[in-house]
Amino acid sequence: MVKNLEQLAALLPYAAIYGRLDREIKAVAHDSRKVVPGTLFVCLTGVHVDGHDFVVDAITQGAVAVLVEKDIPTAAYGDITIIKVENTRTAMQAVVPYFFDYPGQRLRMIGVTGTNGKTTTTYLIRSILRQAGYKVGLIGTIQTMIDDKILPVKNTTPDVIELQSMLAEMVNSGMEYAIMEVSSHALALGRVTGCEFDVGVFTNMTQDHLDFHQTFENYIEAKAELFRSLNRPGSKKSGKAAIINFDDAAGKTMANNSDCPIISYAINSSAALTADSLKVEAAGSSFSINGAFGSMPLKLSITGMFNVYNVLAATGVAMAEKVEPAIIKHALESFISVPGRFELVNAGQPFTVIVDYAHTPDGLENVLRTAKQFATARIIVVFGCGGDRDRTKRPIMGKLAALYGDIVLATSDNPRSEEPGKILEDIEVGIKDGMTSANAAKSYQIIIDRRQAITQAIKLAGPQDVVLIAGKGHETYQILQDRTIDFDDRQVAREVIGEMRTNA
Image (cartoon, rainbow, N blue to C red; front, top):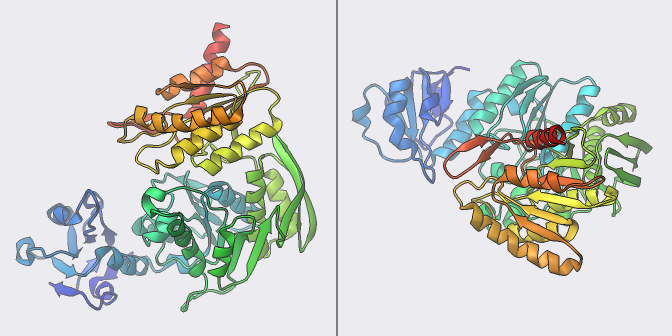
């Protein structure tokens, strides 16, 4: 992409401009390490880092213009154009989509928001649309996919520059659809500015991210922004739809904020899509979806009530996109799994090992309730809570683990800058409460080292027991106070089981 600086400056009518505008801009960056010759460097003011401190570095790397919100010595930087605005983040959100030729208006865009279920739902939608013959891109927690090309990701929803660049690559690669996990942070911080969504999906709302949003009401309002955006004045595309979970209390808020046709789904409420005849087992599930097309019986490789909701949501999207029921059924029954989402670890052991990303109270309760449905012996729970995140959910999750599990091993998740022992003290309060409330013979251990905790769980497991390792799922790393290390719950479980079988 190449734009004339004068074109970009025209998007910022209240900017003060010092220097030439007859420059070619070949890239936009807010990280000086990513600057190449011909870059417009955006100085963002963050909590820990101020981009204004890196102007010299950016110029050295080849920046020809800088976007600032603070006064800098205009004469000190030589032949450079300085554009001063009130807020560089807002200005960046205006400039970047234009720079990349508004790719979010040239793709059919499906946004999935909610506390839990976003990843699996996006993968299910992708499977259905690909089965229908479309070329599909996906941006999510685990990875970005452009058809079959896989790219790593840093955030659930990338920042506006990364996102628009990815979408532009999808357009250039011939994609027809872009399916995105849309986080509350992304909506609140304007990361999806310039994206025109065609279908919005709401999965559910439970406590999470209150460290950022402060109140649950703010959290709901952030999610509702996706639905407010669907039919805003100036929308370029038609055929918009909102797919909303009517079993969730926040579903009504999402519906009230949507000015387009709604396809509702539910299990316990009246809705356009419902499910019945449910059967949940360790290796899969079966149920029927009821909708305008009649009844669709399904036999799936994924399990859990939470996945029934995810399947209903994906089916709602397929209906909105006019996909034939036979194609929907074939795609769903061919779907295997999503990495780290109720993923079975089979290494020849006589008990079940499940790894799941559940890191919220609702997520943990969902997977524990599913395990309870098919467990014929004990449930052994390994879990922790991330550091530098919402502390209030720690005792809640501890209590849930104690209520549903028979043996609880509380351990480190990603402690980040927090002391792991302090995090576990918060969790232990809830575990003790749950043990008292359960009024049953249960036990727990506090083991800071996650590998040791997983090892202990597997050593304790007997035939027919279920070992649930929750919190990190697909992640292949662990973030400690002073470093990030390689760590994959699935790999660790396989290694421990292999060692035990070798030594037996």
